[in-house]
Length: 105
Length: 321
Image (cartoon, rainbow over all chains, first blue to last red; front, side, top):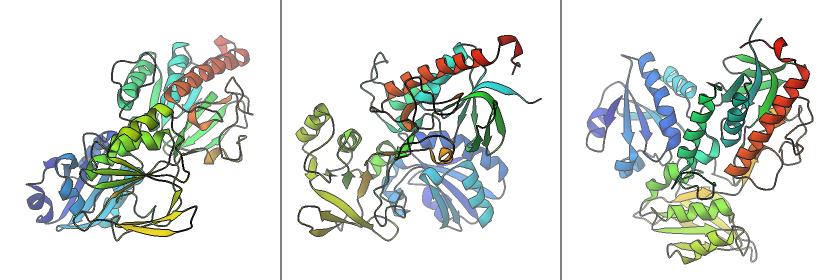
């Protein structure tokens, strides 16, 4: 997964063509760390179709809030720079993320 | 013939893991089933100051990580597979999960509890959008913002103190005129200059387009309704409800005896009304729900499961899993 930060987010996500998934996480969020290996597995499944990225919101708080993300974990799907879908908190699981991707691409 | 485990443990928080440690150490073939996240509620706790004998400055995750390691060292198997339904009618208990079906000679239910919702309008829609039940997950979003903590028990007040690490002001909103939290926790909160209290107050509604923008309170004594709006330069604030817990027992509703709140009724030996089915930890009826009581329940349940199995099945008859 490509690590993005507040400097590269615009370039890699908002100004990027195609489907981009963003895993919003932070160091303090244990459920996020538990989920991340499963998101990495999904990256293998959707290779060439979706670009997988992750953003440490601990270092990009205002950016996360600007993306209407105020709770972790949140996994969001962007298309041509626009957020089209997301799953958050208890609803964020490997299956729900896969469903979200399948329903949109 | 398919594998039959001596013991299937449902849930991998401190209660389930403790049962796993005791059972696998007693050489029961033990399967621990977990939903998608290991560790239960304690994983979202930053400081566990009252678990006796633990290493210095333990956190929820560090305590759970140690328990997982212990259980695995003794040979307990862990699988991630959410339980959908159970069939406890036969001598062999069946646990149907999302991916597979498992059979066990005995079952320990350790599914725990989850934070209860306030039940007001806007709460569900704005979860993850300013409403959060996990201070360690979402606290730092509210660095220099305002935060409301709803509730007056141990969790509410402890989390309020934790959130002052980030927020510029934390208001504890409580429906009574005094806290229910332990005195030592109360003292810490009263001394903290960032914490304010709103007494006799309930939350009527949380509002916002996409993120939390305002919250509506009702004073229980005067009936007065007030709406608090986010400061313009902030645009939002945090709402952290800690108003108690509800047991994760819905799939057992018509199968096992529950109390009126949905907690599983057991005796001192963790036995439910069904032979060979035990319940441990936060999901059962009890007074004190803490890591230490969960771990103690797990130990008792596992020993009872072992006794139950030894009575029913002479060792040679058991299949090797």
